[in-house]
Image (cartoon, rainbow, N blue to C red; front, side):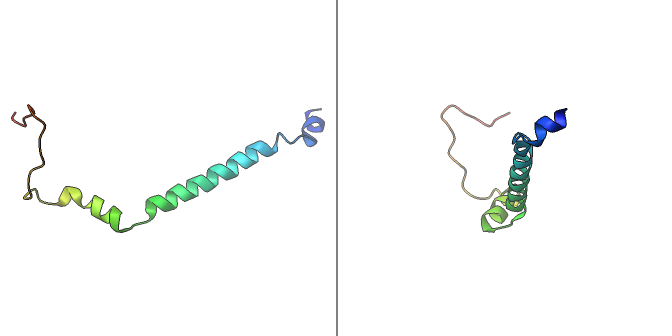
Length: 66
């Protein structure tokens, strides 16, 4: 009974389209995340740099004393 109703329905195409769109978005985000460029390498190396440079300006009233 349900097969006869769904056989001529375009509703079954929506999950397939959603799956294809999700797969394309997933692949695009994965490729973007795996791609290494100059900016990514520079930002990834920030925690390893020394702190010998000039101090950044602090907000008035803020202190780093503990």
